[in-house]
Image 1 (cartoon, helix red, strand yellow):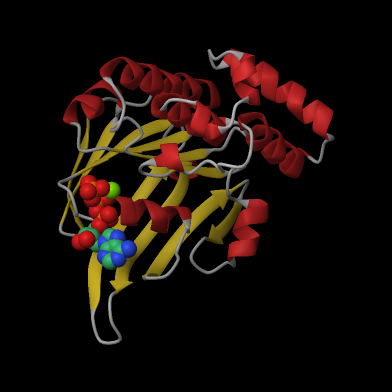
Image 2: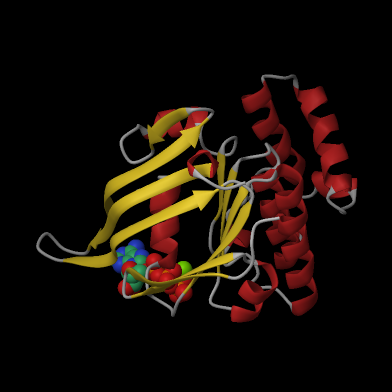
Length: 250
Ligand SMILES: Nc1ncnc2c1ncn2[C@@H]1O[C@H](COP(=O)(O)OP(=O)(O)OP(=O)(O)O)[C@@H](O)[C@H]1O
Ligand SMILES: [Mg+2]
């Protein structure tokens, strides 16, 4: 698909700054404009500190102190255009995050709630978004986890009982659970071994193919980009300095 109607998110002239003192701030993202299209895997590359994670946070609309952002990030949600930088966080929690747009943060193996069993992470999300009972949600979670190639008894574990790699897999599975139309994955394979890297990438790619969503992968690993991305955006010092299309969307 190509053309205007395939654009699921359009960021216009966005800036991101971290406030480090009352008089100083660090410009992390500097006048970036970018479009994400349905059924496309886009890669964001660039050296450490160039602003990749900050850009992802802005596109997701996750702006918390000390980060400040300005510009427009228009999300096309079922024909409605929503500026994720101007709606409230409550609105995003209710209507956008997880269900429409999901985000796998950098070092995400540590984002699970240590006091919640893995199964409850899944069933809570399902209950909240699908308005279903706990038993039904748990059943869906069991089927889903098996479908994702994991054993269902993993749902009974607490995060600390799992390896870092397994936690990472859980976070990726959670991000894909509600079939979002946009997925942001920030270095999803950095802290894991080569075997798990492949598993996670296939996981993301298979789901992307199934959902035909827009998948954005941030990594400085050019091997990963060569393997999965269709379009690559290279950042340097807060700006997009290069954009290349590798292969057409399938
Ligand atoms: N919480 C923060 N407070 C102050 N400065 C920050 C903060 N987070 C990031 N920065 C700064 O913003 C700039 C961009 O950081 P960002 O994390 O977006 O880079 P990155 O490209 O994701 O790097 P990496 O490849 O290491 O993950 C850097 O100069 C960084 O030091
Ligand atoms: Mg980063």
